[in-house]
Amino acid sequence: MPEPVLLVDVGPFGAAVARHLLRLRRDVVRAATEDVLSSTKLALRMIVLAAWRPVVAQCTELDIVSRKRGCPFVPAVMEGSTLSIGPVIIPGKNGCWHCWNRRRDQHEPFAAERSAVSGFYDRCPDAGPFGYLDAVSLLAASRLSSTIDVLDRDAIEGGELWQMKILTREVTGGHVIGVDACPHCGLKRPLASRTYRALEAHFTGTRGLCT
Ligand SMILES: [Zn+2]
Image 1: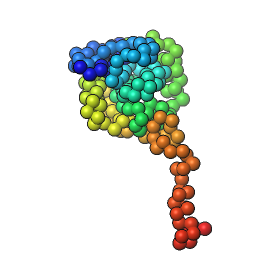
Image 2: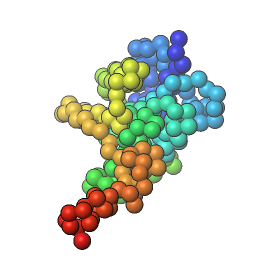
Image 3: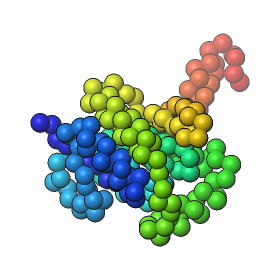
Image 4: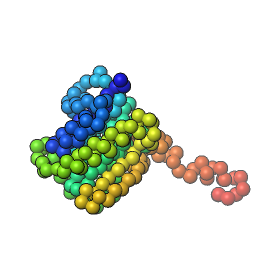
């Protein structure tokens, strides 16, 4: 039996996802965030989180554990009527948690409002809508299970994000692209070396193309 997948669930929707995922798989173990954070000896091969709303602070802490332990981290989050599975974070590969949040802030038209709401929920963990559709929690568990399988087969690049708008059933997918100078992923090259200087030096004085 391989080391287990640790599942952290938050809120009623997260608990429902956990129930379904535990029925689907025998290699998933439910764990409290505090246990994942405090124990360096907890056996695990990856961390998944299922939450009824964005839990940014919690995800950030779990992401730190994921990097320390060198294991993937996959959040499944309901935000309004959008279900997100991912990004699939694989330590050392492109598209980390840090970059995901930076990219969201970069492209989200209401980033400040979203950040304020997220901050409120982080401070008031019992607030938020309790209702959910069980079919959606089953969908999230099923999608998480297939993500665990592709991670086990090493058949996924990292940074993958799958989203569904529950009201329209519109599905989108994509990859998180690392931001400049990310300390965790990306090109891992100093900013100063990511220029055309080498190209300029190559042509300077050779054919007089650059002066
Ligand atoms: Zn990154």
